[in-house]
Amino acid sequence: MTSVPNIKEEQIRPKHLFDRFLELTTRDAIELSKSGRFENVDCVACGARGKDLFEKHSFRYQECPECLTIFASPRPTRGALSDFYEKSESAKYWDRLL
Image 1 (tube, one colour):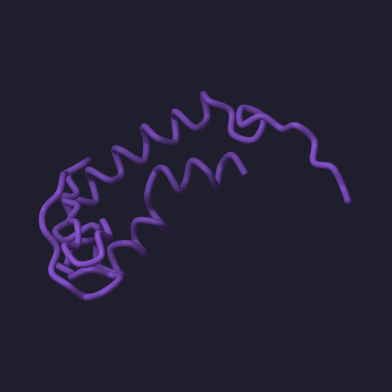
Image 2 (cartoon, rainbow, N blue to C red):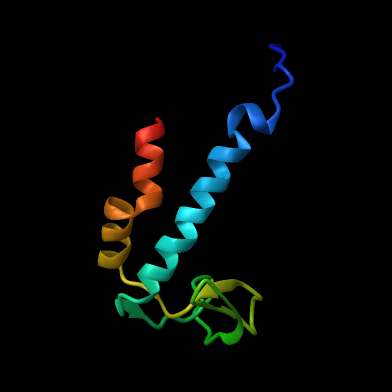
């Protein structure tokens, strides 16, 4: 059996880099929410209609009354997500670092 060295999270993901990523992600999420490219969805696990639970960074989250899954609805369309991961500042940030 091979032992795993005692690696700390700071060594894998330095706090200052991750904090910057979170800042960019928050901005990107707000910009994405302004795009208008969203679709309403039912529970992704069982198909039941969700109930509004909370909002974060302009996204609404719902809870399924049947299976208690929490999911975003409305959620970005596939095209909106594809554009987001291709063009967002947070994605570009990791590309530059890696």
